[in-house]
Length: 214
Image (cartoon, rainbow, N blue to C red; front, side, top):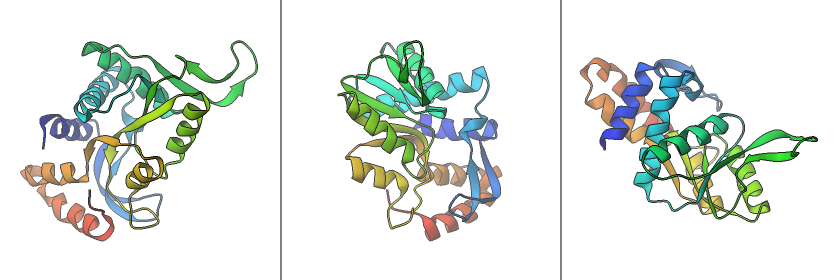
């Protein structure tokens, strides 16, 4: 496990964004852990989160010219990640969309830099892949090309079929998906944390029942 992935899991736990217990997922499954990126809601946590995104994106090797954040969570993530990348010495433009078209001022649904070149989509997680599909459509309609997707956590969990939501996006749009951390990283973290080891068996059992290979 590379250091930033381990550091990210520790950070998510410290901010109680990642919690252990019994939680019901959208799919109706009882999960022993829950990840809610909406709880990164203050300046310091978003700043740290943005730097983890920048590390993950840079380590992925995905080539891109700009960042796109789908409304609503992707808006702050696109802005924050672009600032963190600028800290690393790479200044890239970003854009995002509105849920509803604006009929005054500049109008339209897109805000920020014009969509052009290779566009990296950034979001918190991929559940059903809906926001990725809508983003791909917007990007291609503008004459640009989606380059990949960056998310915070990949649960590596089956969707309606044998593939995970992340694997379905990668297959359907022929796009690389990079996550700051995934379920394998979480299991490795638990195995190396005596104070959290009690959760390892439950998370491992959940993975055995619902997980995919990645």
